[in-house]
Image: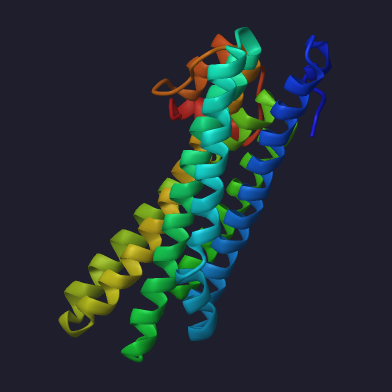
Length: 252
């Protein structure tokens, strides 16, 4: 993790406390990332055993959320942090909430896989789910890297990638609706696939949230509920490539 000038504090113990909770957030992020990857693998490979593990693996993630939240509360009460220290603690509290919710969405992938498997249902739309899942897992990894290095510019680039994920989700939804209209016997199956796609899309949303907290910590600016263009201008960051395309469309 990058140097956040935590060594400037008078209290060496305070430095250790801040580094400790940041380290635990990254541990939690690693668990959640694996949970999502396993959930996607279980779904695409129709792996019942792995799906059961994913569906039951949320306990560790929930435990870490409680532990980190308690440490943050204690720091707020004991240290009464200000300025960047306060922003760091607030960002961590918000980040672990989104990580826990990502874990919940991964758990849903496991449960939906079991439902599909139990009924012997397979779908021609799994290749689309794989493509969407690859983009979502990449976005989650990038958001965790942005947090680890507290890199606001990388965070904005990652926020921009949510546009593609939303477009892919909408495409899958349209195809599934068409499929249900053509073959009503497959409505139940198509709905379950839709729920899987929705879970993946929500993981992308939570990953975007984490990046917004990174920008808040580094730049002291709240970039929620604004366009990507407005966010980039407010923190004076020049971004290009995929992010520039999102700016042209006025998307966040």
